[in-house]
Amino acid sequence: MLIPASLLEADTLTHLIEDFVTREGTDNGDETPLQTRVQRVRRALDQGEAVIVFDPQSQQCQLALKRDVPKEWLQALYE
Image 1 (cartoon, one colour):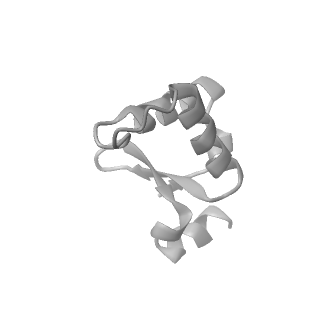
Image 2 (cartoon, one colour):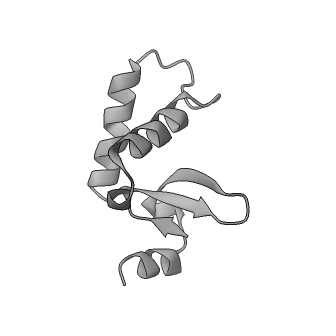
C-alpha cells in the first residue's frame, strides 16, 4: 500500500526519511551530510520520483523509487 507523503505530519515524514537515509547499507561510504541526504529524498518525494510504501502486516514503512513499485499500487494512490 502506498501512502501519500502529504498525509504524514511534517515531523513524522522527516523521521521516516532520516531513518531511511541512515540505515546500514544506504550510505555506501557517502559522507554527504544528513541534512543534504534528507533534502534529496524529500525532493524525490515531492517530484513524484519516490513513494512511501506501507506494509500493513509488518507495520513497516519503506521508501522506494516510483519505478520499482507495481503499477496497480500507483493507480490506487491516484484514485
